[in-house]
Image 1: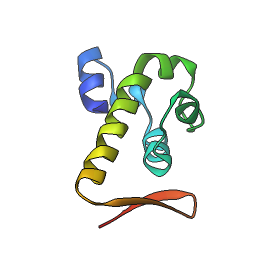
Image 2: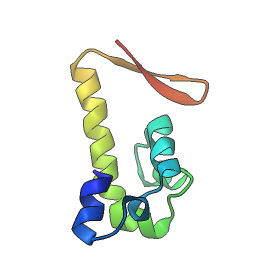
Image 3: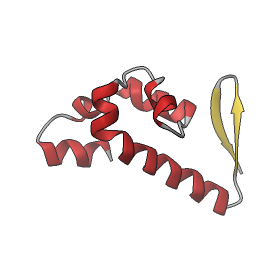
Amino acid sequence: MRRKLADAQNVLPYVVFTDVALHGMCATLPENDAELLAVPGVGQVKLEKYGKRFLQFIRGWRLEQENAGREIMLLRGQRIVFN
């Protein structure tokens, strides 16, 4: 998704979100604006510009995992997926 947004804006992907921010999203799976803002590399401007799309993507991924019968658990501060 980051690449598509970057290509559409004719910018490099890290301009949308850095790798650190993406890793933070994967580790915490934010569910709302406040949780997304807590991810390093996500500020108010990026939240307003991209937050809704990324939160929708994360929600969709979580739903896919649930529909596939996979459980998402928190382990040592990071969420992991168990089959």
